[in-house]
Length: 203
Image 1 (cartoon, helix red, strand yellow):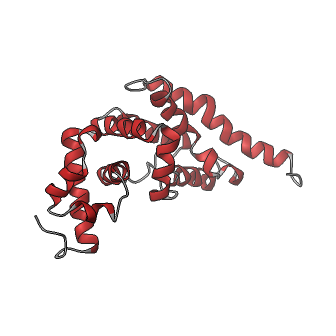
Image 2 (tube, one colour):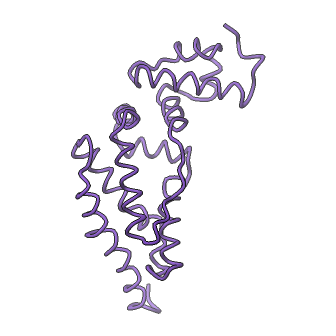
Image 3 (cartoon, rainbow, N blue to C red):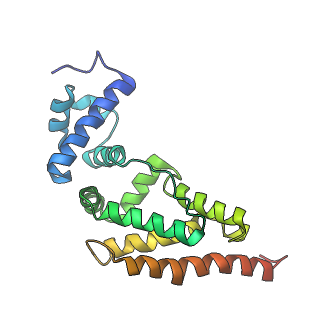
């Protein structure tokens, strides 16, 4: 085993993350240990701890490595885009990767704690595709500019996440995705525009 002196910076970090991904894929978070990752990466535990303070932080970083960013859908309508985003998230959370995500949530003590740690690493990345599709809807005249707010943009994905976290479902039926879109998301977006027009000059 090397001590990592020949590989520094991004090269060593990629080797560690690659090893962590392999361990997560093979054994899940329950089987992820710093010793196994260090051995697989050909480094020592100190090199890992300098970058990630604990097993959970490393697991989250490895999970992020496993999730590929995909371009936001562009169906030509806000409804179509929202449904495509929800369906993609539903497929992901129902997959083996989703099982790893649920393990990480349990280890973090719940969804809010895990999301807080993910947010530390990703900034506004989770909201970005939703803001993109909502921004396109504003440009097409489907939504008012006042609707372009991160909390409004991500309401649908939060509701879908609750299906997995709170209800513990293995996958959400498509009619639930349609209901979230038609009964909550689109009315909320439209209401933002009406409220802004009805209360011009007031907060």
